[in-house]
Length: 577
Image 1 (cartoon, rainbow, N blue to C red):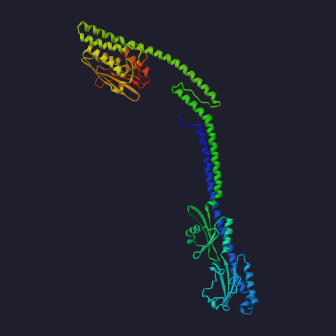
Image 2: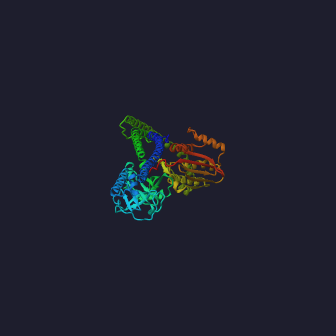
Image 3: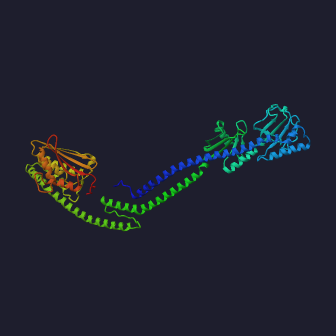
């Protein structure tokens, strides 16, 4: 019964058991949703990057055609053949180059170099009309990264050239060279647009060239990504998750078909799953709020139901333990107030009734104890007085004095009937006087007393040990031929005290011991060969100290009888005399 859960505990456990499946299901679904969304975001990021790269490749591919277009223009062909070398024809060619250049979405420069005529015509006003300078370099038939210094400062550009004749490799042997050039700023501008729309941080990378960044690229982060991903990159596209400064990033890259450069973009993984994290946090907040409301409800139930019940159960338990003075001092401010008030009234009535009965029982017990004590004293007095008379008749003065002193001490002790509780030491002193009297009377009685010092202070009722010694002398030692020996020893346990009175007298047979125990257990107070003293001692021990207390008998190993008086410990202190 004590191990059962309280109502409050059951409510809390039920609430937790209801919330656990919800949390587990949501955690599982949230993990699945996060995985799906992350895959979709990864795919979306790579698709957007591929789309941007395709846009750039389309523009660059369109620019690749410009040298071919201008090489087939009739006015330009006429100018190259030498039939239109007038200023008017040169202006017309420049105009053609400018018109073709502005037809692209990207800023670019179209240039015609005539090594033989040592002339340059270009849509770039900074180089238009300049004379060519002989130079020995490979013809850049594919897009090549270079530095353009025509404006007075270096500008990163990509250049592509076609020649006439087409298969010529020596610059000075060329009839004409058609060149298209665009600055990398075009690419940076598109990176900025992509960054603004997608909140990412893209850049272009080539292992042999400088990185082409957007306007706000973090160079340190870009370097970490290059070391972790791009140095070992293979294929036209890919994705990888890396950690930089304890933060995870999703890195996507796509290789340009036209330039051979990698378009790289990276996004913090936390940003990818932030919507799910927000939804998860709101759900956890809802669960926490629900849990708090459940705890408040359980607390109200505990306060209004559990506490009053606990108080009443405690009151009943205290009453069960015998504490009838306990009252429930608690205001429940509910229907429990009436129940508690009625309980207190009931406890008060029971206490008053039991106190009345107990008082009457104590009075009856005292009367019974005094009556039992008066039954013990006369038998010994008669024998002692006869001994004194005989000693006086024989003029044995010392025996008379010794007997009288011991007898006086004996009766001084036994006549104090108002104090029923003494110590073991007091009882043993009485026994010594009693044994000394018998030693004088019989002359062949020896005795030994061995009781520990700790046991001497234990409380015991009056005249418990003397009747046992008397019984050993009368029924054990006196019928025996020759001398006799009586031993008194003590034994203490956690709950009981025991005094063993051992004699080496005639003893008793087992059948006689069984009959003795049966007669001792009977409530009939009629006398038998036991005498009223032994029965009275047994009844007093049982009556005073409760279950487990009383007398027990067994034969001694060397003959005689062992009588053991047992009483419970700590049943009350010793009254002062």
